Image (tube, rainbow, N blue to C red; front, side, top):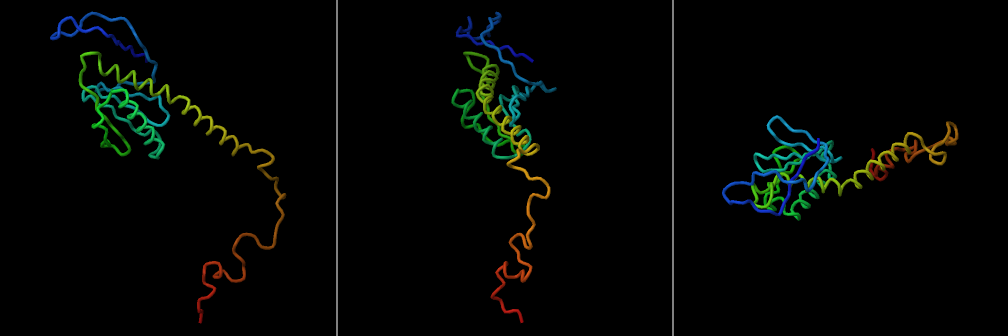
Length: 189
């Protein structure tokens, strides 16, 4: 789904009536997204989080994708710090959402310079582009780790019967098990 964004430096001809003429494209973004039945836009490009833009409430909400670990919270934090630095969201509006693990922030309802929804969408696309090398590195690391575990090298594996058997193995001796649990000096009778 391609979304078209219009950004210009021109001001409207009259302050009370919005600009009606069609503007030329200045930027376009390519994101994996979906529109909900109530008009919200879900952006599903990031590996750690889902981003939902709620235009009716001028809100951006993020949800962890798979797990509720520090990794997803750190990604949410980076997104909102990025949007705050760019002036897209109101810094005092960042808070936890009503769904476990979600964070949300509000953006201004309107601006005399441009469509706030399109600017927010464009900045989210820029954030995802900045995060793409990080996401690719994590994916590559996971693939290498799976390959290492499923097909180990000769150095990391042994053939059956290669490990010599010993009479006693491990940390517990068969003589008196209580000795290893700190019970050696306890009076037993």
